[in-house]
Length: 451
Image 1 (cartoon, rainbow, N blue to C red):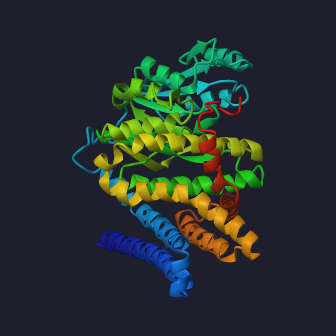
Image 2: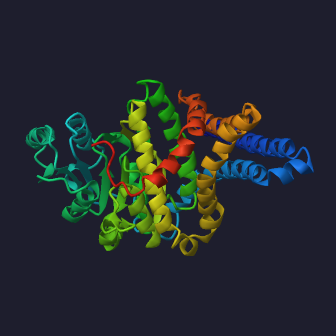
Image 3: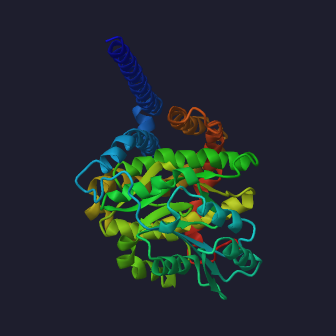
């Protein structure tokens, strides 16, 4: 009897703590939404001081309200991410409800001149929490001219199951990825960059969502492995967290992640094979596309009707640029792929996902192309013609970032890089806002930019 009373008391205490935690979470979310709404109200108040002010600058006024509302909507969507993810594995579309879901899985790692990182990448693949007999590791050496192949030969002796495809001439990352899809006998293919690695303990989180038969791809949460190297890498660490845990989480709420990151993403082979050759044949203005492979493949899967999702529990690590010139080259390449992919995605997204298209994708496109115009007006044209500092523009950017940072802290109170989100916002405002213009100018340059 006393034991029953004790158990009941413990159960009640646990339930009480759970209710308290849920209440605190609810209040915190409400505070974030209220803060965003207050920001929106203050912004409207400041911008509409007079009717004449709105009439003279309607685009500036509308843009400020539009961007603030859009960013707030992404945070709100991200708040529903966990519920959406849970329902994905609790519905009628499950092929296997067993907890020990273990299909054949394979790592596919394209590489060129990666003698510095490839050993660590391959070694960690063999350490994942998964039955060895159900795991393949395939490395495609895409015409390396350094010591990469020598390192792979040594790894082959250490790991006899390692499969190495050695191409004497470079054929491109996309073709190397495709070779892995065709060679592997696995049902789930994990595509991973050669300077990245997967967290061994969270590997199963990449596999488990495929129990839902409509899931075509799962994106892991990417984290900079060299985050603490310098100021630039710390800024990128903050950006990566926001990009994955807020922006991709918001997209995943609607089962429509637009880019399953090349850092580490898993694909259902049976979903990829029907679109493989269309993806390989992608061209733009008469030239083959040599970058944006991950974004393009994701779009083909969305077009085919598959779900593309993000799993925050699956963790992967990657090396981010440590020097400014490398970062700018990377951002230029990403913007080029984004522009080209826009012309492909816009042709089907309104039919496949009308809600996402109208309330997320279309606003994102509008903001992306309007931002450099508005930034030029606020940061260059107005100061030169009126001799005034763009105080209100910078304040607006910082206030929006503050709302993001607030939710960032809510998601992970142990993450120490959140203050760098403000530096990333300033860097974006003064530099990255204009990269998309340069990407349009250089769109026909298909060079990788780093080789």
